[in-house]
Image 1 (cartoon, rainbow, N blue to C red):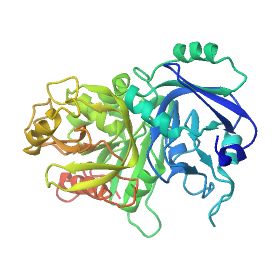
Image 2 (cartoon, rainbow, N blue to C red):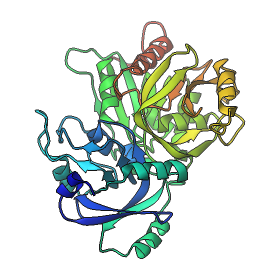
Image 3 (cartoon, rainbow, N blue to C red):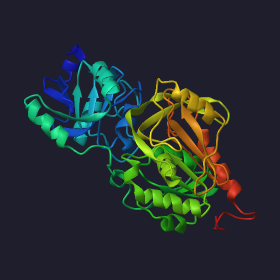
Image 4 (cartoon, helix red, strand yellow):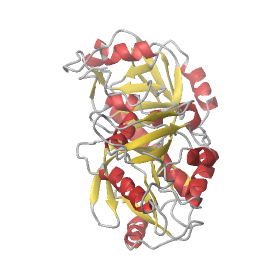
Length: 411
């Protein structure tokens, strides 16, 4: 155990993985037992945004950056109303919170929110293990717990495959977010909250969108009832195959000809609405340094990701096998943007991950709908993807009939 890990306090704890691998360390945050899917995040910063991102619901997140907690916690950066991670694994908790914006330490925040963490010296070994074996169920508990008995309960805990979590993290009631002072309302947007982040709402509002945020289970009729100029389907946790209600809502708004923009889970929902399959990635994409190519322009964006599922290639239930050369060849084919047929007209794969060939975006060719798998509201250093919100506004502008809004609503 490192000196900094020991500085977190003399409270021994253990991390037990589904395959029996066990890591010992020091309790960090709340001292309680917790279960979830063990994943890792490669970001060197943004830990407060990670903790409060609803897409991490029911997951134990390990940070690969060695020092976490340096800037403490503030009340401006949370992405939602609470911390959603089930557990938190770090290597070296910062001894001090050094930022003029900090109002409390990370450990104080975790304790206050009842979130269990563990500091271990082997986060690199843990990350390599997950890359080789894949994301798996896990638990954090006090060291006095029986590892064998804990392992049995880990294996009895629910898997992420088949988990319907969007309705768990979504708002229970509809609400509206308007543009900031001085920005006129240009569009009304119906946003389906599958696990929406505060930054997403800010981006839309700054562009003059009055956002009507609806629960994850909102049907197409409820979406259309707010007379929107466009529909937005947010990021969120869980298996897209379990969110059939969102797929049906997506089909309804596509059938109505409404402009549509989806991100992350919203992109997977669009894929399923178009007739494509989805599958679980071995260890997922979680971090702020993912290279994604826009196949329309050839431009590569450095993007922020948080997803464990992805859209399958047209005509296939699974992705090309990374490392075989197959995905590079298929990426070249997709670079020609070969259309595939859907119930709403021809579509193309618009973006691809350059690390492993995973589908990162979809676009309909004769209807105003598109999506990306990554998070354009996040700033992983560059702001490469922020312009996608502007593209959505352009779609809504072009969809308007002459002399009024899509539904001729009064502004």
